[in-house]
Length: 346
Image (cartoon, rainbow, N blue to C red; front, side, top):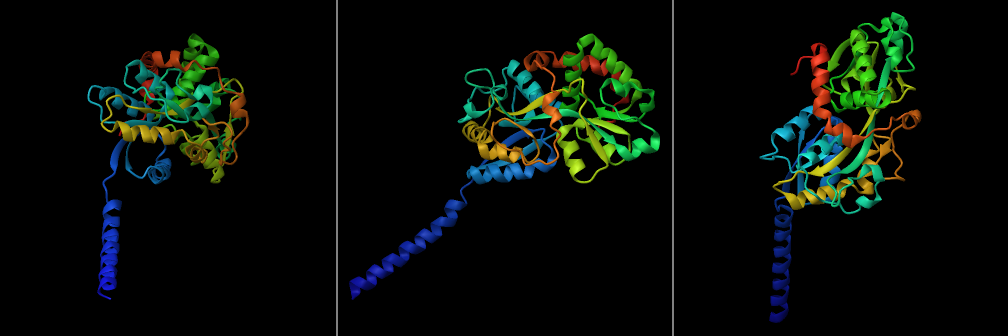
């Protein structure tokens, strides 16, 4: 009887010890990863939740800004990096950082399943792709009717004097969308003709914004007749009922890839590798497909509705590495010519 009582008491104590230990185990501190990004604000929380659910011992702390600004910040901090990992930044920027030896060589587990052009060509890799985003024209059909604005079919059509003061686009120094747009013009037209085109378009330009999505939002609200923006913002706003037509110019559209890269000198390298591994998984690509139609992993069906199929048919041929090497020079030239119509910086 006594032995049974002692055994029961011992079992109870063990159970209490297990119960007491469980919260302590759950309360173990997670590694706080500083993640620099240019993703849209509405994408941050879903991605954070999914990644932290899949990798239980990390916590994501976002540092978010437009592509040009976040790129400039990363380069300015390269001698004393604050970012552990970059997740959702233009491949033009990643290749520029690669050239400055800022990226940690690491091939994420499973990266071989990605499309070849969404993978770094180095071994080990320095970056891995997520999705592609594309230049688009958001054309407000109501404003067009009110103001007698013709429907453009090509970039050249935007030079029509009817569009004077009716066009807005992103500043390429601040916005990745702005940069991929002018890089697309250079690829499609050749450098000299592209600069001539931009000079003529500047006469019709009302404003250069510091956000890639802002021009489409401006057009959707009827502030301007049309905005040069990015595909995912255009499709999202149209699906929400905005009175816009998404125009994919027949003379070719610029595009960019978004990717993930570990910052060389990351304070939390092992945790950053875990996130880089997850960022190339099928689950991550399915999540990217909530906002993007062109994904890094073949066979993943995007969930986004109403995406014009002609986007993929009209992409320009782009040498990302060559453009990345000249990015600073292109932006200096652009600023000298056109920065006078840029929106004030906050």
